[in-house]
Figure 1 (spheres, helix red, strand yellow):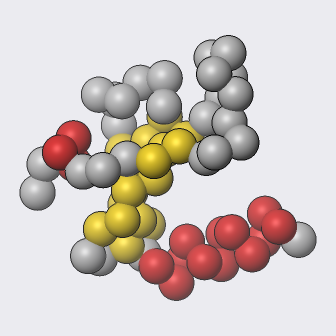
Figure 2 (cartoon, rainbow, N blue to C red; figure 1 turned 180 degrees about the vertical axis):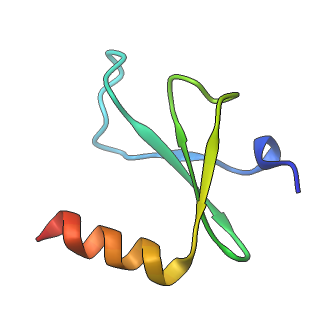
Figure 3 (cartoon, rainbow, N blue to C red; figure 1 turned 45 degrees about the vertical axis):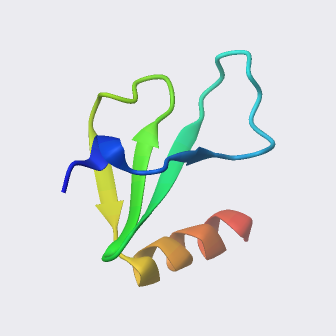
Length: 60
């Protein structure tokens, strides 16, 4: 699977001033994560359960 061909989304609250943002993409096996400033750079694939746990921890 070519991760560059996915539909990547940035948070609606992220600023357009070049801040530190990540983009997410839905994958069959989880969630893709990449740096919005370096879309051709490295990408992570995180399982759905692990991603949900990460989001819960960040919200807490």
